[in-house]
Amino acid sequence: MNLEKYKFSLITLYVILFIFFFSCQKKDKTYFETIAINDVKLSTPKSGSWRYNHDEKFQQFLDFQKSKKITPKPGKNTIYLQPIGEFNELQKKEIVLTKEYLRVYFQLDTKILPVLPNTIFPKSVKRVSKEGHEQVLAGYALDSILIKRKPKDAVVLMGITEKDLFPRPEWNYVFGLASYENGVGVTSIYRFANGNLTDSNFNDSLVRLMKISSHEIGHMFGISHCLNANCVMNGTNSLTETDYHFARACSLCQMKLNSSIKYNNRKRLSELKIFFEKLHLNTELYLIQQDLKLLQ
Image (cartoon, rainbow, N blue to C red; front, side, top):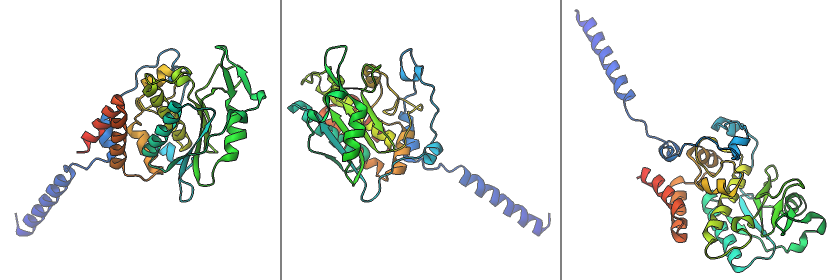
């Protein structure tokens, strides 16, 4: 072999080794790839569950990016809660804690507006339920109360009422209703504690309100029902199903949310951990701790 051929072979060998070396280097995982290990696979849907009764399309990240959605922007980036009704001290505490949770969950400024009285609902939108308690029409709360009162700097306005809600005459009740295009929603705390909030059922009711509120606001930010994993964005037909779903958003739904709201993921997790510790919400705390462990 002459000298030129030897040099060429040597250079070729170096190039091959260089390519091999760098192709074998471990790529740094993104935050979302890292925490995806903690995503819990969805079980087979049972009769009566949301997924059993609804044939929904899986929203991939690219689908989300192409979808029409509300996005926070300067001057229009505050979440507002609008209490409607007569609230006792425990219920007021529940709303304040939900405000704190939503501020941490979405990493957006969150405020509570002055309470509106139940007299704002005319008799024409009220009825007596089969169980014997008063209900109000959810659509009226949206169209005739909330949309008209949405603050100029609000990205989202979520009404919270202590009255049970119904969406139409043939339905028994609904946990909440939202106009995603207008960034307005309403939810009722009535069913979260069977109409009687006490110290013993407070945390159960609070977690349900946290889940439903963050779920509905997640929809307003363009996230469809999650078919990726056990997640707060899963569809739900009942309190049993709501309780089964995690308050944690799965890695895919977190990626969608973070693409619209540019927050620090580690800071968000750390603040959620503090919130759950303070209230002794052990299931939610455990899930956050598992995510934080992966980031160490």
